[in-house]
Amino acid sequence: MKRSTLFTFLYLALGVCLTAIAFGYPNLPSGLQTSLLISAGVSYIACIFNPSWRERTIRFYRSRNSSVILSSLVIGFTIIGMIWEILSQNWAMEAFLGAFSRLIIVLGFAENIVIIRQVNSEH
Image (tube, rainbow, N blue to C red):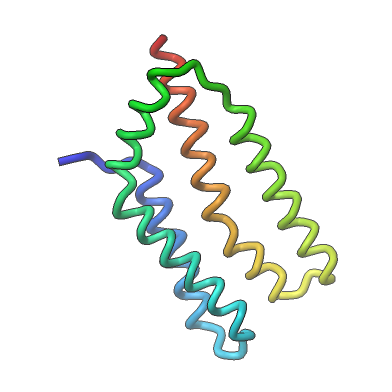
């Protein structure tokens, strides 16, 4: 059996939080609620397939000398976009929840950085 990692539990926790937020606030706009539920679903799927996906990713990066620059740029631009959205909407709750739904992107690329560093340290 493939073992779970910290990121498996982080995907699960993110999915639970997004689902609780989507169902806990009945007055959310339907588009925002749909976005939260889709992100929660993607988080649950990532939680289920994380161990096998992680093994395939490690095998992929072992054949290459990879850099973390692209993953770091994606995380940086995603966080800057989230902050921009929150500030442009004057700290509205909907802006926070919309930004919160994009944390799955940050979490996925953070795991990618951890995998790349693990593989690069083996060499």
